[in-house]
Amino acid sequence: MLPQPSFTLTIPSVHDGTPLECRIYHPASFSRSSPAAPWKRHAAIFAHPYAPLGGSFDDGIVDIVAAQLLRKGYLLGTFNFRGAGQSGGRTSWTARPERDDYISFVGFMVHYVHGLVSSGDADQQPPVLLMAGYSYGAMITTQLPPLKDLLEFFFSPGSGLHAAQIRLRAEGWAEKQRRHILREAQSQHTTPDSTSDSASPSRLVPANGRLSPISGFTMPRPAYLLVSPLQGLVTHLATMSLMPSILARRRPPQQDPSAEAKLVQNPTLAVFGDCDIFVPVGKLRAWVARLSSQPASHFRGHEIPSAGHFWAEEGVLHAMLDLVCDFTYTLYDGN
View (cartoon, rainbow, N blue to C red):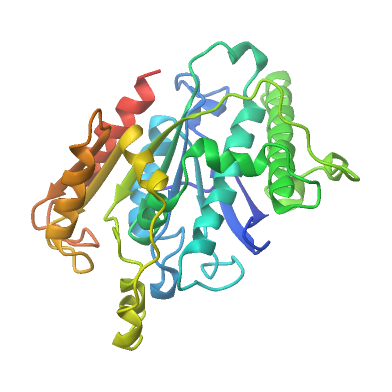
């Protein structure tokens, strides 16, 4: 199970400024008194299930899987989509705002990690950024644009844009963490700073113009983890919300081909059960076969017999965790 977060904060969504509730978990290696190996700069994000059905970053599957990533050494981030927990707004019908919510948190995490890395680490291999999700969160993960395209929002945004606020907030929290590490080095009796959201130094906000591109910025190596993905099921969200069936027959929006291509071009694991009540297993098998059979594909899918969408059947949760750990631990140890 996940421990208490290292800090909590809110960020605005690049979609419309909706405030999003976020949690950051530092791996054990951040503590100077820990025997854990030094942090390798790898980070992971885990997105939660459908909010109208109670999904949030407190979901049990999110908690169990994300805890394994943190234990391995990933710097971990979770967030609530709009309409979940203390995030503002409400769940959309199209999933486009939620995609932008995820983009917003990716922007924060990438710039927070960059702010923690010392200049002496610049010659190392780029770190991994694992973008993950369960159920609805996995569906939104598949809709994300390629990481390079996604980060263009934050390259040199105007000072009044939400992307600029996100970047500045990440830089502020990174500076705060660096100060804490320095104080801890000076005294083992240092008390950690408050985890309130007031940590973003106001002095960082520019009066006008645009934020400058970040000097020495290193593009992370993207990877993707999809647990019980609702592949192609934007139309089923209406059914999941118990709305009239006529709404469930609406055609889903066409997915950007580059969004799906990123799953083929980068390490990706999709794990699902053959008894998922939301997605016919034949549809998932066809999707996995299509992506994994493409030339030089890095996409892998694993079907777990007798497993349902919620991983409550006997033995299936451990089988899923074994696959997830093999995949994510290999990514971590590869650098």
